[in-house]
View 1 (cartoon, rainbow, N blue to C red):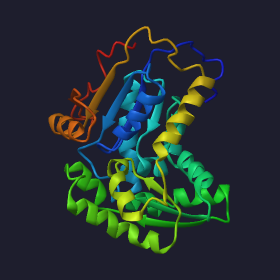
View 2 (view 1 turned 90 degrees about the vertical axis):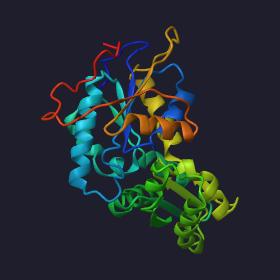
View 3 (view 1 turned 120 degrees about the vertical axis):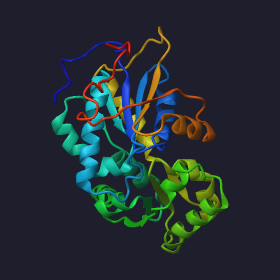
Length: 290
């Protein structure tokens, strides 16, 4: 969709973002940092976490329902705060919905290409993201001389979601997963899942200070800000305090507890059943943005 001509100076509507669970909160904090005037609507699909072992058909179905919900919240822009869904459903959702969207894959790939000195880049991600080869293609489309080494890490998302990010078990799992990447002599590692920045201290300890770690969230939010500015979608005036709403498909109190434990502060979380056959009136209501 051509967004030129649909400009609205200082647009007060919120930014929507979604993930399978807690990981997208690392994207939220980038939005808070780079666009502090903006309101947000966050959706964590905790009923279906983790996404990494699910089929493309399932993930596209989940994304379709979630984006329909975010659109009902009158969002002006959507950030896919999930590498797995960025790799599999972003292009399809762009064809189905008119709201502009940003994924994580291309911004993360660009940052990795800029960062590597020895042209050996590692990717650690969910099984679905690795199998999609989205990062590999994006990197090689920018620089075909870069060797890419991908490592699936199926245990890491469940460990973060279980509130075990600071445990010895999680540290040992991180070290085990990165060992093949260390043997490949990478100098740059893409944290290809939004849950993984919560484990950055483990990655640094396992791999050492020489490795450059790329968090695609930071690059994606920066590109989002630039694109929103070009569409005149930014809320330029902090006249009203930003509002941040959090929705989940699972247990809201559990999500709030774990988010606080991860250092995200106290948040109010609401539960939404997205299946319209069970909850035909699931649209976002009372948001104050319409």
